[in-house]
Amino acid sequence: MSGPAIGVIGGSGLYELEGITDVRWRRVRTPFGDPSDEYCTGSFAGRPVIFLPRHGRGHRLTPSELNFRANIWGLKSLGAEWVVSISAVGSMKETIHPLDLVVPDQFFDATKRRVSTFFGDGIVAHVGMADPVCPTLAAALEKAARATGAGVHRGGTYVCIEGPQFSTKAESRIYRGWGVDVIGMTNMPEAKLAREAELCYATLALVTDYDVWHPGHDAVTVEAVIQTLLKNVETAKDVLRRVIPAVGGPRTCACPSLLRSAVITSPAVFPLGTRRRLDLLLGKYFPLERRGRPAGKAKRKGMARG
Image 1: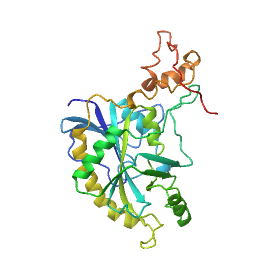
Image 2: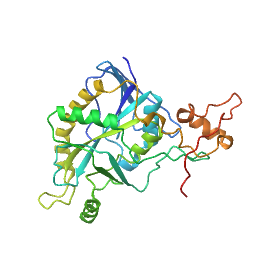
Image 3: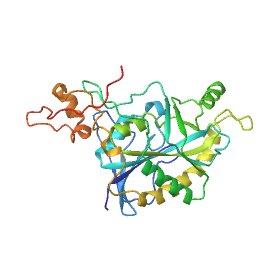
């Protein structure tokens, strides 16, 4: 195997990834608790791959129960540099049909109960989210998706709701009025945390339905979603088989250095316990001295809001 590891987060219906060799299921402990499941590590087309079933094998966790921090931390600690997120979504546009694939480039976070940062407890960081998707990985995903012959849409906004219930008609109409393209329950705060972890992150969204806004289609039901989802999952696996060999090499995007100027707190006042807990993220910028205090000065750009 060669090159950096590629992480794959499997959404609803995608709990295993066929074709991985040298398979080993690995349990990872993180400072933020347990991830959704063990990580399946191995090799695919000569590339190291790390696969995580987002909802656990057998689909045991609701969107609100997902430990997003642990999931992303585990991928980072195992060596992932690229993360492909597979997610089932509803369409909010007439032109985006069930069974289509979408590679969104924006997210709107409408969740209510989720912790969305690794930071706090004495260390503050403000990571930029203007462009939350890695353009290099998104381009590779689009190319791989189009090669399958599926209907593919590049760009657009994914609105993430809390769930686990589907939208009311009133909510669906409001989201449509915002101009969003697809709706789901799992990509936030996943994308935010991937940015903080300096991972290249992009989503392959599998369209299963028209939510509940479309007058010509029945209201979304679990049965209808699953029927379409099973077809979409096979297409998603085809996309992964194509994109994994195509991703790798030195990262020339901005993702590997997102924390360089994001930490606002002076290293002189870092709480030692917090600094040690976040060493996976901060070690390359604020190395710990022998006696345990962070060395160097924080590079700050701009001012915090609030």
